Image 1 (cartoon, rainbow, N blue to C red):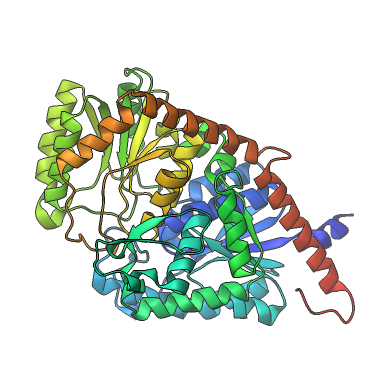
Image 2: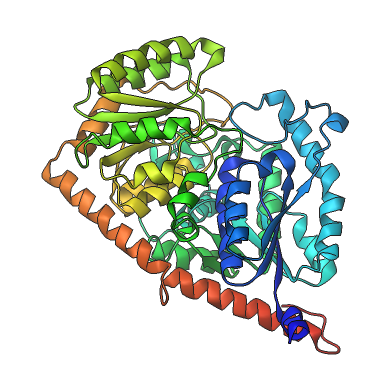
Length: 499
């Protein structure tokens, strides 16, 4: 019986990209598969494993079949200091191509492990387009992970296919994104620069799109009820299979221990938790604004000052997740600001990593200011919170359209210019504009109340999606059953095809 179980057990390898915002949701997905009795190995480098190893240890202790296989990143071979092996807020520009070189060196080792570990299928981040060929050589499915929304990917397809930004006379003139379920307007400056002005990254994205069409399908951290029109639209325009398994943060992190461990490295202190939690628990329900711009963003000092004045001048208490900005001396302003707002009791600053899941579910939190990174949007929906939207880079401006125009659970701060994630950009949003958006979100007007009701309703739908009979629950069961059938089919004589 043990041998029979082993022969029928599915073995999967998950390969996250070397960036925190990509690692965390894909690891949560890997954990979901392990929860459903798929034997899972996560391939990553030693430094990046520290971001999620606490979560894996917790799951392993529960008897789930999941583990991490660490690769040694070839830092010295590509001219990088030891431990520099990720794309994050502190990665210097000159280091970026070297990290890509390191990944290229690791590719043969990863391909070899696909075979050595007897993978029945692989789930790899979109930034590993080569993995579709590696899977094809082994006769197994490659499933692509997308870290964005269905709307964002649909909007990008629209922009690339129809090129509406070429049909306007100025950078500020609005145009409609053609072929989408809703009439969504943008300007040229809100479109990614690599779309407007083709470069090497444009070629990489073209390669990624081609690899998706040759993959077995794609996975998204989304759920049908959140963006149903775009769930259907995306599969239609791409002509490929896709499964929404979200919200993965809600599904994979149901215990307080999971929520606290998620995304926290082993070197990060937990001493701060008692401080913010004690402070937050003294505040009335729905009275605190949570302000965070994700793991990849830095603002210049001029923008930090505007944010600080807007928060201090608002009627609301706030928690602000910040980083010292050494380039322009932002740290000195923030340190003085922190002393002032802590003394008054109005604000609380968290430096660096923050246990976002635990914070957002606290009853005192009434809304948040977000960069519209997809992980945070989904986590806000889980918590039933409306948002002030402040898109910056990547697909953020597309996600803003979903939050503000489609779901109507957000207020735009008025950001006008897309920028690269590792640059400041030229735009500085004024304290007046920030203040107006905060007041609109948290002001208690009738329209604010309706927005909050819509957010709460989506929270209910998110929780339903992951329960037995829910859309995401059904999707993962359907996919696992398909993969089981493919494995059995492959085992039959004279049958080497998997799709």
